[in-house]
Image 1 (cartoon, rainbow, N blue to C red):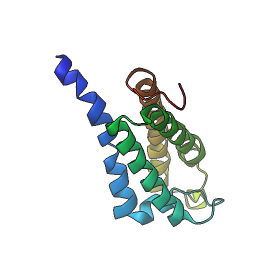
Image 2 (image 1 turned 30 degrees about the vertical axis):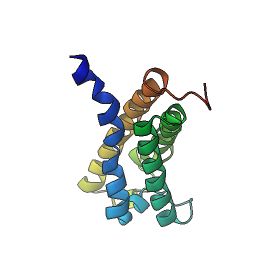
Image 3 (image 1 turned 135 degrees about the vertical axis):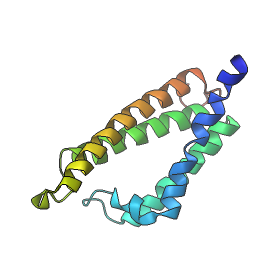
Image 4 (image 1 turned 180 degrees about the vertical axis):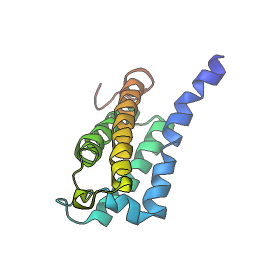
Length: 138
């Protein structure tokens, strides 16, 4: 059973590859999540993808992995608070043209917000209990 449970150390960080694929494969989608008040959405889309790749490599190699998990947790919770929660409340969704599709968008953004909270918890747990390289943040 421990061999199966130990797979989580690899599966969790590798699962972030899906986000890298989204950022590079569909840059319009990633850039659309950048709030209007932040300039250069495509830059942030690609920058985020590179940061996620760095996180994955660090987590798998075990070098600066505690810092990587903690930094990724900060990024994920900030995305939840600065992007998904405001959109779930109707900001930046064009509510003047409220349709069933926009109501559905608000619901999906709330699901994204909840997902970000859960992933943040998992990242912090990995930083505390799985990460081995504690050089930077102890």
